[in-house]
Image 1: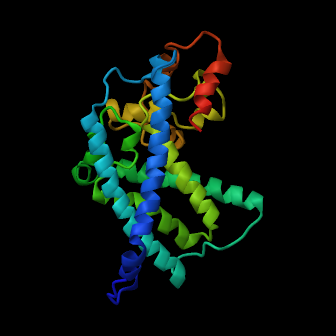
Image 2 (image 1 turned 90 degrees about the horizontal axis):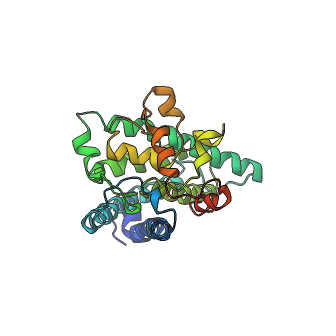
Image 3 (image 1 turned 90 degrees about the vertical axis):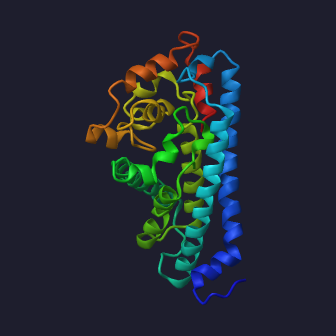
Length: 276
């Protein structure tokens, strides 16, 4: 252990590799799993669910993975500071215990709060004074793949990582809830960059699911709707703020209608279930 006299850096020197490995393995599991799902879909009768006609190149995937490794290194640094903050009482404790309904409520609240945080910082990074320094590397993925989930420049990775300490500054949260959120967010992130629509045709037709994001929603943000569709998990901020792509529903219907057996909702739902 390196003794610098500055405890967070000492924690980083002692446990930084552990934090890096945890986040990198989490990224590999999510991006790898979604990649396997879309590999299967691409060779099935649902191959028409590819959203773009353009195909990502291997050089695109290589860039996405390398940038994601860079981002994971940033997360390891922030994770060291979070570990120190919890130990020193600067952040709320993770060893708290609640009832199961409270666990579920906290997990839901954390997801909703993260979605709001993501929408506004994402939208801010599209400002012309910030975009080049924060968000441009991510948007080099015009046809994204699941490996783009963490494909961030260092400043953007830092902004994305700050949600966790901000949340833990205010809310005592069991470690199990934080872990569940970490797994949920990386899988949903990988799904958003899958390039294939993983949700069934009826998704935008029900009062509940229409508010939950789809792959098409975020793919439009990469492929042409540059100043549209900023949301991560939900669509309500985009709807409320007038930033939803005007052809979102039309594009979703077109993509989910291609190659699917007419009326076979059971088979189609199997594709959607593979995404969760």
